[in-house]
Image (cartoon, rainbow, N blue to C red; front, top):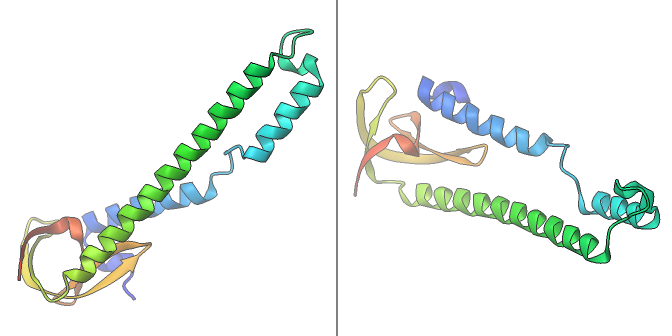
Length: 146
């Protein structure tokens, strides 16, 4: 399996940025979960003085509005994650269909490389193509021919 050092400096930078983004998403512990929100909401409803204003815990419509907003935000976040996964899968499928085709690539030092795609590797889910024994990112392709 190829490691990140087999890529050109620009390719390594792109791969490292993608991996850092993925790690941040995996390790993000600051996200409030629906259970946490419901616990806070229940505590606020049962203890009106927790609502911020003395003696006023807020109306039922305020609580429902907050719940709807939180649910919408949660669903939008999930939609964004699903779209990222769909895009990544489409890129992977595209890379696989390119095996055997001739490509021209631009390297980081502005040199062109022309060759046949011998294979595809996935590093962190990101598709890379193998041309003449070296791995390249699909973004380095400048021309594609059968």
